[in-house]
Amino acid sequence: MTAPDLQTPTDLKSNETKSVAEALNGALADSYALYLKTKNFHWHVSGPHFRDYHLMFDEQATQILATTDLIAERVRKTGNVTLRSIGDIARHQTVKDNDADFVAPADMLKELRDDNLALVESFRAVKAAATEAGDNATEGIVDDWTDQAEERAWFLFEAARGA
Image (tube, rainbow, N blue to C red; front, side, top):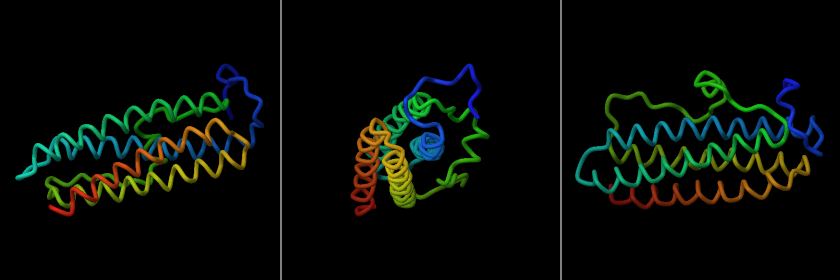
């Protein structure tokens, strides 16, 4: 239940926006997990394609991080509350962390590709919940996030072909 001080006015029904907020918070948790993994790989990539991968991972991480604020603000606009901590993110994320001391560049590319495709699935769940709730604003904005994640997956797929 949202604290009275945080109840943002909305014409959407609270029981319907709750499912949208849950889907958005899941996508937000996955976005943060993917952001941190992408930055980790950016910091630790090595090998003959170092510069290309290092720059691509940084660009992708920047794009993912920019989306997190939009997702969280959408949750608040629907009168709900969003994630509050690293622990809260961990409780909601489905994207798995990678704590390995060393990851081969080809494995980095494949793992990030798969994680971006998993994020696409999270965004599709947001879209379905928003459609069900009649939340056309969320329904519309999630299309851009889906397209960005699909593009990242495509770039990672193509880069992995030569790895």
